[in-house]
Length: 292
Image (cartoon, rainbow, N blue to C red; front, side, top):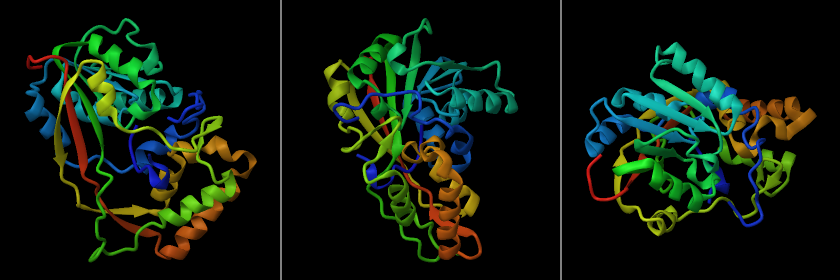
């Protein structure tokens, strides 16, 4: 699952996953989330010596964005996600791209793996690992990956502050939208049927080292490319986020969307916004010393 984490980026003690985490968000995900930086597949192909063979498992695959973008580098890709809407979107997109025979989609929590899926050369986590029981999932991945296989953690680079100078449209008012979410849903970040007062955890390096992975090797795929977004794109971004998933607003959903669109009109009467493509950060962890 990919995309802008907002001011809440950072799972907390006491929080438990439930199946409403992204309920209703799948229909907005592909349109709303910014893509990974162009060149990601080329970087992975080079670093991992990928040649169209082998198997990929993408854990927390969302609507299949990452798995389908890498499918040409493998003989088979398997996407795993707990949300039925995400699996349905991935299935439709794979069929539309003529990849139905190459891609398999499994509705399951990462904690339910290996689920009889077999062995893999590469496992990817596209901004999804923080939602999981990380020690359990990391240990399971160690056992599912072939010797020398790679666990790849992929995320937007969060430390960039790209300038929008010279772009044709104003930026989307992300801070104002997130403040609006708090007005509707309260000051503490919502996550499924519960809340995340302290955000999601970081330092996956300690987790992966603890279970026996070696590394990581870090690679940055440069972003910075100008992007143009419509008001509908920005609305889709809002509803694609776990903390603003459509079900959280209940009967006030239409009113919330109307308020979002009002903010967007105030920020850009033309309905167009400019952003810059985030860079993509790739951490490659090895399951032993051999090559993939």
